[in-house]
Length: 119
Image 1 (cartoon, rainbow, N blue to C red):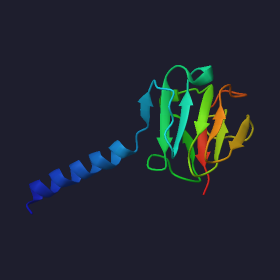
Image 2: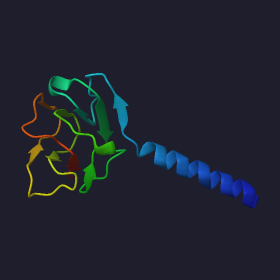
Image 3: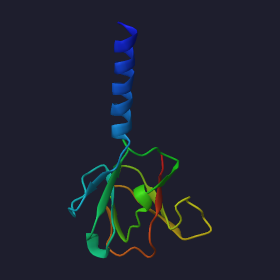
Image 4: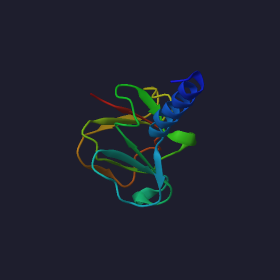
């Protein structure tokens, strides 16, 4: 393989990896199995973001993208998820853990700016 083709292959591989690291934006109120979904409004209304284990590292603080602030959420992941009021997962602000497999929160007790998925 030539150096030029190798460079092109490296750029394409990076694009694929970076592409899978992005959350999925949507306006639907559906949340697929294996996903964590959050909405900007109460009762699953407004702009939505969906995260999965493909796009979210476990045991790490993950700020919701683009300074997104969630007011309702669903945990359909196969792992427990802690949601945080602070974008850095600070325990100085509000936080709570929602169990795996279908936890619905139509009116979160605080705005959510970050999550942590547990092993």
